[in-house]
Length: 639
Image (cartoon, rainbow, N blue to C red; front, side, top):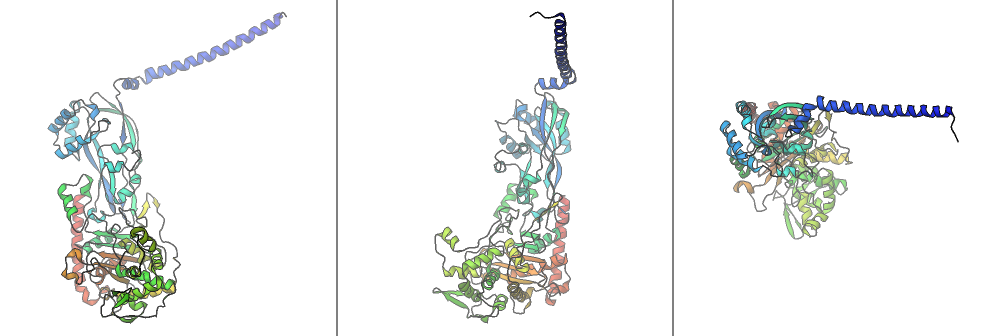
């Protein structure tokens, strides 16, 4: 069918419009391409020229600022200081030995540092920088920078290094950092690239290790232009990293300082817990050491001194070591019996000085015996036979259950290194561990904190705190992360009968305040400050009769736990003196002095002490104050 003239003209107009539309799209696309080509060839010409000429754009990590650590009052425990270092990127030089020789002519390099640097060069990762010299002077940095064209692969950096102004005070708590090692890298399936930076420091023990990923922060990055000698010409752009948050601990530096000074030359530990939130106000282990020596690599001589010291300065005795609790465990056995309704407070047991169980004699510490004795008297005199009798009535399962209820057998999540859970034994544990049945003699031993039972000083403080409050209070060491306060660990009601707890409180009060109490000589006489406590002696060797007649390492451990004020408890304290002989002699006096220091927030008035002790206490306070001032002067000089 033939088209009309009108139809033909209409079709032509449509074709023309489509052609114009298609042409416009093509023209627009060509224009965009032209603008993009101009932008790349003109505006970005320098950048693409740099990228084309021997990869002169380098991406470098910016190490983040490590979070600081403070005590509960804002005293600095761990902070950062600027340091200068000289680093080498092996792939940027043809002859590593020749470059190192040139650097040596400009800067004095330590041979040991050089050997470590050479050993750390990874053939499979030649782009990883290695540190030739750390903590060098500004003059050394200037000489190297001025000779950079003759030192391919060598650059200078300003970094940060950790410093611990309080030195030995927090060695076991905060711990320390050191250069990244293989063990640190093995913590990760895919280690963060920032750990390969030269001289990067990683938390090795303590809070520094437990909060490493948090304190470290997040690395930044920068693009820099470098010349043929790998000298930085200019920085193209930068993305700042995210600093690690600061941590605030619950510990009071003044109290921590006093506790460590009061322990003196003993191999011992002190734990002080606040009974409102569970805050650890002091957690001191003696002897201690200076963590600053580990930051840049401790010398062989210094490490040998720490390693060979029989008092084990590196051990965090407060949480790491576990001891038989001795008679401090008797409150557990007593509460288990009261809770089961198997004993009345006024019910008496006759103590002739021993008890025969299964054909074996189990002796009381007082061989002549205590005669007829009730619950309060059993704690006051620390009679063993009374608790042997309770063990036969109660059994190990109830005793073990009460021990766990009071916080034993648990590390409580304290963020320190090598925290022990201790040991609360029962029938299943012995069968599992020793493939043996539990025997009645095991229960008798456990009832007075001997045999298989093991506890740490921190756990003993928790036990005392729970007895004092009747709550499941747990220790809190980190008070604040950044600006966020950590949850309270005040706990909830344990469900123990208040009357039963009151009977235990009265017995512990008698230990420290009754003339016949085992800790009467270490009593507090200030009204409103009196403490309730319990002495303990843990046998190291069953053959020792007189601690004074044997070598130090064979003597019994001395223990003491307490809370104060006894009628309105605010703090709980535990003290363990390794090989101290007896709790009443070695541990109770330390606990009394630390307790008063904590309650008064400083040196207590002398009238808080018995009259006959005041001259000795006055001299002791003067000596400890002098020693603390000397240590503070040393810390200030180091800072």
